[in-house]
Length: 325
Image 1 (cartoon, rainbow, N blue to C red):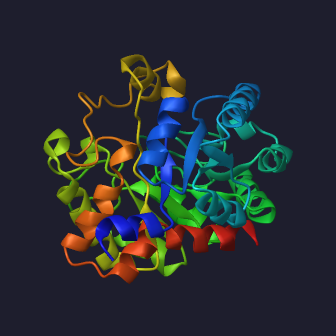
Image 2: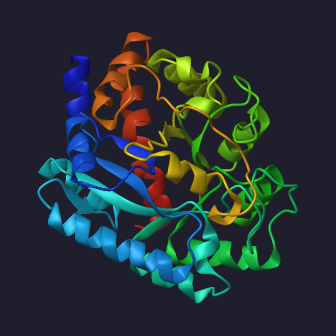
């Protein structure tokens, strides 16, 4: 198979997209041959604002039904592939929307939320993010993990502190993930994960989605798709070919105001970090360039069988485990 044929034939899943929702993005997803994506509907928002985001997103998916379908199960992912559409899975980057109500976990599952990150950079009622002194998983957090396990929502630890992450990994009865991270072995950064952390999550049945967010890559905004592929290979050497996938962290379409909101605690308080200029790696600047990743992995010697796993098959398997299908 040619790289283009393999990409077209594969299930291609992006484990994290936080781009600007509109038809233009959906068209680019189709251009990139994206089968499904975990799309962020909550970061700093509480319960009501998150429900409002989901209401707006539901309408956008309905209005663009020729391009996208909602994902509630892995069968929906396969249906999207068969129909030549992109499946949209709702995800949170913060458990803040659960507020202090364990019952909200099931409510959001019923609204189509399949993955929830336990904390976003800072402290919440569940645990601690990666930009603060880490106090670990709270007692309430343990109840939230148990309820997420029960209803079938995956625990995501990408922006979570090291101690809280370790305790979620040990607490959860189902696989958990770093949906979008990079190895600190290639660049030291609060958001990147050490070799030991990557090995720990994999050894406990977890999963790693590798991001290409330029500030976390060794060469920053000068990175290319080969630098991204190198990071994928680095992580795979630690976690193995079955516990790895893609989680780009595409922020396509957003401007400075959005990044200011992301990088302040609670969206408005103290500044946590400053990304500076954000440019995706050359060769995969937009979602529409996704086929270039399949081609690059093949060119660097990755077997077709493994490329299929990395590009999406592994995500399908682990989501099936978590969702209890």
